[in-house]
Length: 137
Image (cartoon, rainbow, N blue to C red; front, side, top):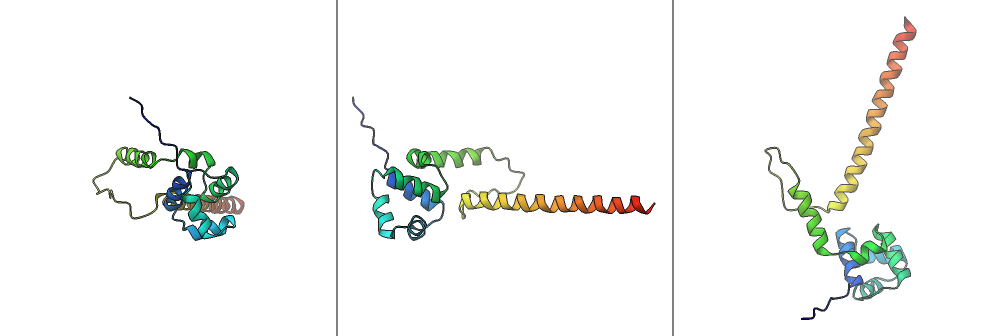
C-alpha cells in the first residue's frame, strides 16, 4: 500500500500564522510593501519565493522554517499540553480562549518588565533612605 505524502502548503501556513497573530492581510501587505491582493495570492500558493517568505516571516515574528514546518496539530498539541500541565487551585480554569495567546504572552512579558522596574526603584529608594539615616548619626 502506497501512501502519498501531501506537500506543505506554505501559503496556508502563512495565513494560519497571520490569523493567530491577529493580523489582517492589509496590515501584512503594508508591512512588506505589496497589495492585499498579493498577500491573498501568496496565501493561496503552495510554494512561496524564499525572498518573500523571509520578509513575511520577519513581519510575523517567526522564522521561515517555522512557516514551512507549521501545523495546526502542533499548535493544538502545544496548547493541550500546556492546559494538561496547569495545576488549578480550586478555581475554575477557563478552557475557551477568548484572546490571542501570543498577545497575552507579549503582555505578560511587558508586565513582568514593569514589575521588575518598580521593584528596582523601590530597592533604590530603600538604599537611599538607609544611607540618609547612616549619614545623620
